[in-house]
Length: 425
Image 1 (cartoon, rainbow, N blue to C red):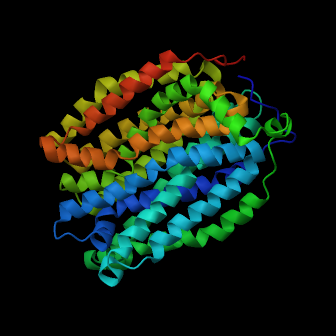
Image 2 (image 1 turned 180 degrees about the vertical axis):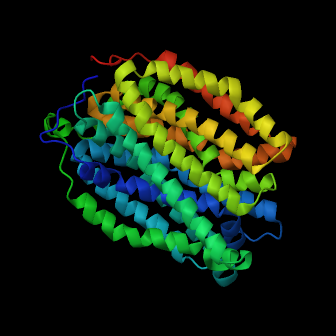
Image 3 (image 1 turned 30 degrees about the vertical axis):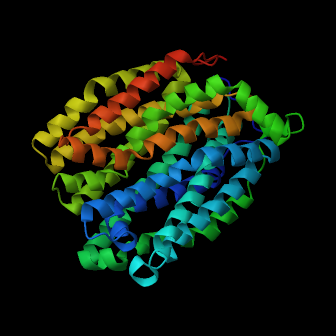
């Protein structure tokens, strides 16, 4: 498949690292929040009821996703108008506000109701920035990729997130080994967030040296925001289909990463083992993403997308039922690695597919809006499945949630027309 543009100079591994570095920070912070949701809930939402505090914490985790569509519109339009580099620097700045806020805000016991308000505000700011971060990174990588390797290069956007999953899980394992449960609940959960804050200056240095992509530099002068909004409206059918395409990615990703430690607790499995499983999932994702991204360059995107959604439909609930019938760490590993293979294979083809079907004039804003709308649903996966388990008493019900997402994504695949299928445009 031809790339969206030919780069003016060879793309290096350093270029990819600089581009995806902020994406790493965003996912690292979200993963830490998900891993320590119970402790964060106890710190900021004390109710006397652990289950209620957990739900409030997970709702706050999900609230950031509600801001993503707005961030996609505002910041995505900024990127389409002022350039990929400017957009990546802006989203990183806003993202930093979110992680610092959660790290330094005192607990409810110290400052009362102001604590959850500040935490929620920080999550909303971070959600706003995240609405365009992933889209900016994906579009930038697509625009600088060498001819015929777009799928492979764009896959490193998601791969950077998997590195964050692994790092966050390993930090959690280390803390659990050094600190007792009381220390983790009292202050230990702030340590991985503080480590993320220390990365912020380095990430700014890395991104400052990015060059603008040729695809953007060679375009006509950027349109104003009103023109971008009109073009987005004209492309609304593609954005809606893009929302459907992304649903399986967001639902399955947050199911097998952020929710795994919480789900493991519900199955009464050891806490450290749950974090090790999550680290294994991140490593599995990291293996599958570039491999299947490269395969999509050879055989096309749709064969991979269709195969993965059908397999998710057929196996998600049976796999969850098998796991919950006799919970064990071995079964949890087996199920999570299977879901990881489906998620990562699908996502590797889906992300580049979405960059290719969105019109060039609104590529960053259109991609970001579609992705953010889907994430506003998928990001609530930990909350939704926890609630569904509580209502139904069926611990395998997350498999139904996965199947619904896969069905909607399958519809979106057939609803879109794609002019780049495999080796030729």
